[in-house]
Image 1 (cartoon, helix red, strand yellow):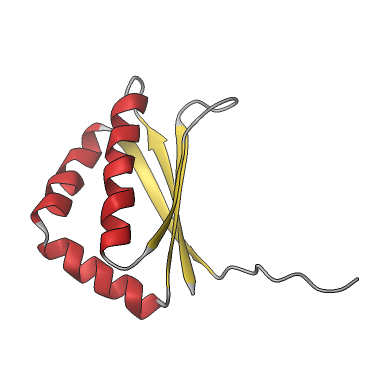
Image 2: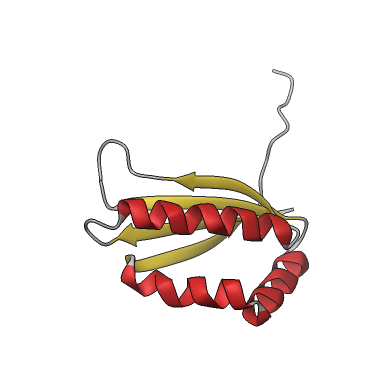
Length: 103
C-alpha cells in the first residue's frame, strides 16, 4: 500500500471553497480505486495549511489513477480550479505502518 500526503498552502479567504474542492476529490479518488482518508483543514495554529491523505494498493495503482484522472472531464475542471485556491502544494508518498508489536 502507498499513502499520498498532500500539503496545501491556502490563499486567504479560500478555506470554504477549498473544503468544497476537497470534498469533490474524496469522491473521485474513491471512484478511481483509492481510499481517501480525508482533508484536514486548519483549526488552530497556522490558518493557511491543509492536508489530504489517501491510499492506493500500490504505486502502480496510484499511477493508473493519475492517468485516468488526466482523461476525466470533472478532474480536469478541478485541476484548473486549484490555482485560485492555493499558493502551492507538496506531494509525499508514504508507506503506512499500522500493526503494533508486543512490548
